[in-house]
Image (cartoon, rainbow, N blue to C red; front, side, top):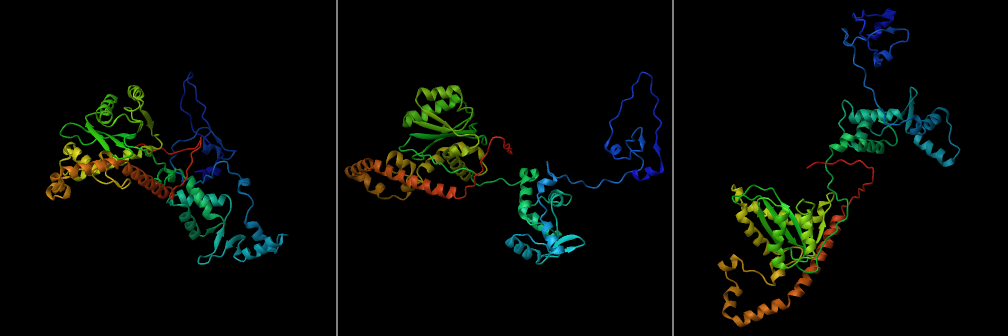
Length: 433
């Protein structure tokens, strides 16, 4: 439409009738009006012209606050000057380097090209041309938001070149907002592994809530789980709902009455655990409360490991009757307590009571302690006394084994460490789970 303007001096449109009291608003000049010649007088813009105009070509927007000075010196100029005029820098080594580099370049129609090893001539570009090419290849009409190296090789196959194309493409891909939002989650650890242990049983417990689970036949759907850091002994109970009063009752019934007052309980920031009533209860009994941070919930890793074990064993015991998990909870806990732990080398029950439990397999196929020990009470009592006398030594050996296991685990974990520090003012992408 703008190509037809030179045939007329003025474009006029008869205005609609206005009442005397009605004011005609003054319109702001649009982008089309600003681009018209100065000698053309526009009284009113037609919003929907009868003749459809051709779409404007794609405009490339360079990165913010970019000027000609930000690009530095043009790397093509010394090579062009040497090829055309034979001029070299005054420095001997720079001149020698320029001679070697210039052998790979040639000038075609005043443009610098690089001779590729297996590719045709590559057009050498600089400055705004680099930004235009990278933006179009990465996020243009045919862009695939590829990674930095893949984008650099794609640009090279298209016939472009500049010396720092790989590093520039990697930096451009890192600055792409859409690539950051839809990139795969990073599972590499960002902080070193700090293990927590306890020197004696029932000193330190981890506490967590599992659920909501499938509603059982008893109507319960939540699990309150506590795990001893030393022996790996698990105490768990199912509830319909869990409030701070339920947590206090559980501690009274299953922990304090059964194993004594603990020194510390490690838990998360659940509302049941941070209530004033529960904190006052722990303070009255001298129990230290430690909370894992929302940014790093792995700080309560012992509870997470116990939850995973309980849920995994429950799934293996249930078929289509998912509501029967409550009836299988105690058998699962018993099986866990009588299974040797890889970290300690002992079963949780033996570290707590000093001896192994009699399992149903020994009733079906009797071993010596089932076939011979009951008939010799004196030797059986003596054996039990010896076991109880040496239980402290076994616990010390288990503690050493546990610490060695934690060191090996930390060494393997920290070998994959990739530090990603967060500073004040940094933008982060928060995922809502």
